[in-house]
Image 1 (tube, rainbow, N blue to C red):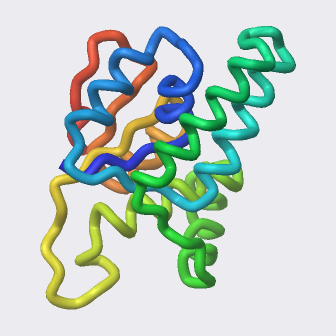
Image 2: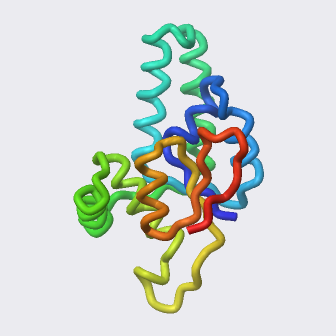
Length: 159
């Protein structure tokens, strides 16, 4: 299965959280992991914030950023081009999303349902993982399969 990760589903692989076991299982079970190129910046910022809040120490921050680099190297990152940025802008207005959430929504829509964007392309077996309720709601509105990593009883949320 193609797994789309937003930042809230990647950070538990870097900083211990309640969703770490689920996020680890999703990562290990995926055949392909995809995200927007903004994932790297957002995840590094989240690790920095965890250190500033006292959730992790400075040495733990260094280790987290090193692991982040290793994980990012394994993710197929989608560049935000003009077309994707325009679609994200549309979704930010129509679905009430913040900027980076709109980018994640548009990016997952593109990779999960390429038939809507290209000729002769089959739909993909794909799920988007996030703990962000607004983003999950947007993906559901787009009829995409979601995984709510904030839920302990993890199940696929069919569109």
